[in-house]
Length: 178
Image 1 (spheres, rainbow, N blue to C red):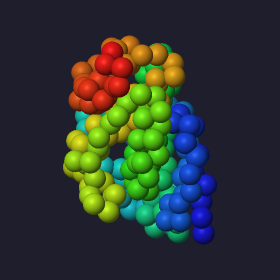
Image 2: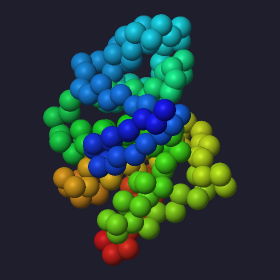
Image 3: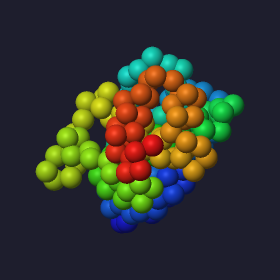
Protein backbone atom coordinates (compact mmCIF):
# COMPACT_ATOMS: atom_id res chain seq x y z
CA UNK A 1 0.00 0.00 0.00
CA UNK A 2 1.32 3.43 -0.93
CA UNK A 3 1.12 6.21 1.68
CA UNK A 4 1.02 9.94 0.89
CA UNK A 5 3.55 11.87 2.94
CA UNK A 6 2.99 15.62 3.28
CA UNK A 7 5.88 17.58 4.78
CA UNK A 8 4.39 21.04 5.17
CA UNK A 9 7.43 22.92 6.55
CA UNK A 10 9.54 21.72 3.61
CA UNK A 11 6.73 22.08 1.09
CA UNK A 12 7.26 18.50 -0.07
CA UNK A 13 4.63 15.91 -0.87
CA UNK A 14 5.71 12.40 -1.76
CA UNK A 15 4.73 8.75 -1.49
CA UNK A 16 6.21 5.69 0.15
CA UNK A 17 5.31 2.03 0.08
CA UNK A 18 7.36 1.17 3.16
CA UNK A 19 6.50 4.13 5.41
CA UNK A 20 3.51 6.15 6.56
CA UNK A 21 3.83 9.52 8.29
CA UNK A 22 1.95 11.16 11.12
CA UNK A 23 2.63 14.74 12.16
CA UNK A 24 1.30 15.12 15.70
CA UNK A 25 2.00 18.85 15.58
CA UNK A 26 2.72 21.01 18.60
CA UNK A 27 2.92 19.34 22.00
CA UNK A 28 3.85 20.48 25.51
CA UNK A 29 6.63 17.91 26.05
CA UNK A 30 8.26 16.13 23.13
CA UNK A 31 9.72 13.17 25.03
CA UNK A 32 6.55 12.68 27.09
CA UNK A 33 4.45 12.77 23.93
CA UNK A 34 6.61 10.14 22.21
CA UNK A 35 6.34 7.92 25.27
CA UNK A 36 2.53 8.15 24.91
CA UNK A 37 2.84 7.28 21.21
CA UNK A 38 4.85 4.18 22.14
CA UNK A 39 2.13 3.12 24.58
CA UNK A 40 -0.51 3.76 21.89
CA UNK A 41 1.24 1.23 19.65
CA UNK A 42 2.15 -1.10 22.53
CA UNK A 43 5.86 -0.64 21.92
CA UNK A 44 8.18 -1.86 24.68
CA UNK A 45 11.01 0.55 24.01
CA UNK A 46 10.71 4.25 24.74
CA UNK A 47 12.48 6.81 22.56
CA UNK A 48 16.20 6.77 23.13
CA UNK A 49 17.46 10.18 24.13
CA UNK A 50 20.54 10.74 21.96
CA UNK A 51 21.29 14.35 22.80
CA UNK A 52 20.97 16.51 25.86
CA UNK A 53 17.56 18.22 26.00
CA UNK A 54 15.36 20.04 26.09
CA UNK A 55 14.05 18.78 22.77
CA UNK A 56 12.34 21.21 20.40
CA UNK A 57 11.12 18.35 18.20
CA UNK A 58 11.42 14.64 17.59
CA UNK A 59 10.83 12.10 14.83
CA UNK A 60 10.45 8.48 15.84
CA UNK A 61 9.70 5.27 13.90
CA UNK A 62 7.03 2.82 15.01
CA UNK A 63 8.41 -0.31 13.38
CA UNK A 64 5.73 -2.86 14.29
CA UNK A 65 3.20 -1.39 11.86
CA UNK A 66 2.75 -2.02 8.17
CA UNK A 67 3.74 0.25 6.61
CA UNK A 68 6.22 1.45 9.25
CA UNK A 69 4.97 4.67 10.82
CA UNK A 70 7.10 7.78 11.33
CA UNK A 71 5.74 10.20 13.94
CA UNK A 72 6.91 13.77 14.49
CA UNK A 73 6.06 16.39 17.08
CA UNK A 74 7.54 19.66 18.26
CA UNK A 75 7.02 22.47 20.79
CA UNK A 76 5.98 26.05 20.10
CA UNK A 77 8.88 28.49 19.98
CA UNK A 78 8.78 32.25 20.64
CA UNK A 79 10.87 32.82 17.52
CA UNK A 80 9.03 31.89 14.26
CA UNK A 81 12.36 31.24 12.48
CA UNK A 82 13.37 28.76 15.16
CA UNK A 83 9.98 27.05 15.01
CA UNK A 84 10.18 26.67 11.21
CA UNK A 85 13.74 25.45 11.55
CA UNK A 86 12.66 22.74 14.01
CA UNK A 87 9.79 21.59 11.82
CA UNK A 88 12.02 21.49 8.71
CA UNK A 89 14.65 19.62 10.72
CA UNK A 90 12.18 16.94 11.84
CA UNK A 91 10.68 16.58 8.36
CA UNK A 92 14.18 16.09 6.96
CA UNK A 93 14.59 13.13 9.32
CA UNK A 94 11.48 11.71 7.61
CA UNK A 95 12.94 12.26 4.12
CA UNK A 96 16.18 10.63 5.23
CA UNK A 97 14.38 7.62 6.70
CA UNK A 98 12.28 7.03 3.58
CA UNK A 99 15.33 7.44 1.30
CA UNK A 100 14.10 10.52 -0.57
CA UNK A 101 16.69 13.18 0.32
CA UNK A 102 16.96 14.07 -3.37
CA UNK A 103 13.62 15.93 -3.01
CA UNK A 104 15.21 18.34 -0.53
CA UNK A 105 18.35 18.67 -2.65
CA UNK A 106 16.22 19.65 -5.67
CA UNK A 107 14.52 22.38 -3.67
CA UNK A 108 17.82 23.66 -2.30
CA UNK A 109 19.18 23.89 -5.86
CA UNK A 110 16.12 25.91 -6.91
CA UNK A 111 16.88 28.32 -4.03
CA UNK A 112 20.48 28.72 -5.26
CA UNK A 113 22.29 26.14 -3.11
CA UNK A 114 24.41 23.54 -4.90
CA UNK A 115 24.71 21.24 -1.91
CA UNK A 116 26.85 18.14 -2.34
CA UNK A 117 25.85 15.48 0.17
CA UNK A 118 27.54 12.61 -1.66
CA UNK A 119 29.82 11.90 1.29
CA UNK A 120 26.68 11.21 3.33
CA UNK A 121 25.16 8.85 0.78
CA UNK A 122 25.81 5.25 -0.16
CA UNK A 123 25.95 4.44 -3.89
CA UNK A 124 22.40 3.07 -3.61
CA UNK A 125 21.21 6.53 -2.57
CA UNK A 126 20.35 5.46 0.96
CA UNK A 127 22.16 7.55 3.57
CA UNK A 128 24.01 5.66 6.28
CA UNK A 129 25.14 8.14 8.89
CA UNK A 130 26.08 8.23 12.52
CA UNK A 131 23.70 10.10 14.84
CA UNK A 132 25.65 13.36 14.72
CA UNK A 133 25.85 13.39 10.92
CA UNK A 134 22.09 12.72 10.72
CA UNK A 135 21.54 15.82 12.83
CA UNK A 136 23.71 17.96 10.53
CA UNK A 137 21.75 16.64 7.55
CA UNK A 138 18.46 17.43 9.33
CA UNK A 139 19.78 20.91 10.20
CA UNK A 140 20.26 21.58 6.48
CA UNK A 141 16.55 20.83 6.06
CA UNK A 142 15.84 23.03 9.05
CA UNK A 143 17.57 25.95 7.35
CA UNK A 144 15.58 25.26 4.19
CA UNK A 145 12.31 25.19 6.16
CA UNK A 146 13.02 28.60 7.69
CA UNK A 147 14.51 30.28 4.59
CA UNK A 148 11.12 31.49 3.38
CA UNK A 149 10.82 33.46 6.62
CA UNK A 150 14.35 34.86 7.03
CA UNK A 151 17.97 34.60 5.94
CA UNK A 152 20.67 32.09 6.82
CA UNK A 153 22.42 34.35 9.34
CA UNK A 154 19.18 35.07 11.26
CA UNK A 155 18.43 31.34 11.42
CA UNK A 156 21.93 30.68 12.74
CA UNK A 157 21.52 33.40 15.38
CA UNK A 158 18.16 32.06 16.56
CA UNK A 159 19.43 28.46 16.81
CA UNK A 160 22.98 28.93 18.10
CA UNK A 161 26.29 27.28 17.31
CA UNK A 162 24.86 23.76 17.38
CA UNK A 163 23.67 24.35 13.79
CA UNK A 164 26.97 25.88 12.64
CA UNK A 165 28.10 22.83 10.57
CA UNK A 166 24.91 22.97 8.46
CA UNK A 167 25.24 26.75 8.14
CA UNK A 168 28.81 26.33 6.85
CA UNK A 169 27.77 23.67 4.32
CA UNK A 170 24.99 25.89 2.97
CA UNK A 171 27.19 29.01 2.96
CA UNK A 172 29.79 27.21 0.81
CA UNK A 173 27.08 25.82 -1.49
CA UNK A 174 25.44 29.17 -2.18
CA UNK A 175 25.72 30.08 -5.88
CA UNK A 176 25.54 33.84 -5.38
CA UNK A 177 28.36 33.72 -2.81
CA UNK A 178 26.52 35.81 -0.19
